Length: 338
Image (cartoon, rainbow, N blue to C red):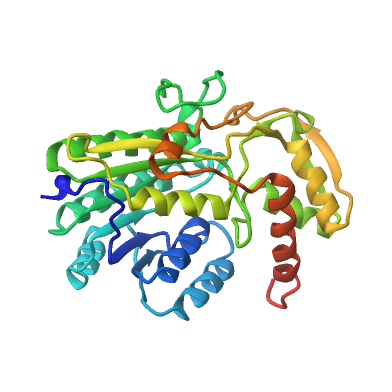
């Protein structure tokens, strides 16, 4: 029985990974492949940001032994069912595909309902149809904490005050997963990611767009003068946490859990810009603007639970991670197609 697979450091052999062309998905796929597992990647490669970056990630994954890719929209039930029928050997799902971005959810809310709500249900149903399913790990977000002001955010805090539709869809995912774990015995772990950054990152995120503007000599907008604070978490630390949790599914009597995965340190956006200036070798043109209604003042993750479970202990400070990102970014920006 799926729910009886106990937390003993077991590893899946074939992992179905959605969002394989995305930032976290790409790095997670590389890590899984590096330790000898097979990865079946899914992604619709939408144009929310430059598809050339997604295609470049996929090109690198395609060079790895054990990687198979299907261009599929996770909200397309028939297409996902066809993939599952072609890969009955899948024993674990890492579901990272989603429509990302807090502010864009005010522009196209339907995209968030389609991908984050319908897509999550489709993947849960796909997992339910796998006879050998051992663990279903999925991406939630620190955005679910919404208007909470207590720091750091803990998994036991209330999460019923979302400040964006994006946050509301991620909380909906957690609730649907709870129901599926209860009804069908699918061991599940939801991971509340806190401001992930690093090489091969997302161009819509602040650190990436700031870097691009700094190099181009364009002004950057800092809300409340850069006083907003975020729990910036480097991608290598995140991937270690994802794999550590994947290897340790909930006990059968627990069924499911939700965990924070962050750096446990809140730093100002101004500090982020300072580090970008230093590592890029250029000064930013800073413009201040009022904080948008969808943006929270501060985020910080309590990571005691994931630390106790998987030994998660983030080790990359912003002062190290940003220079690493900047080194990659300068190389990427220098390519002829960017």
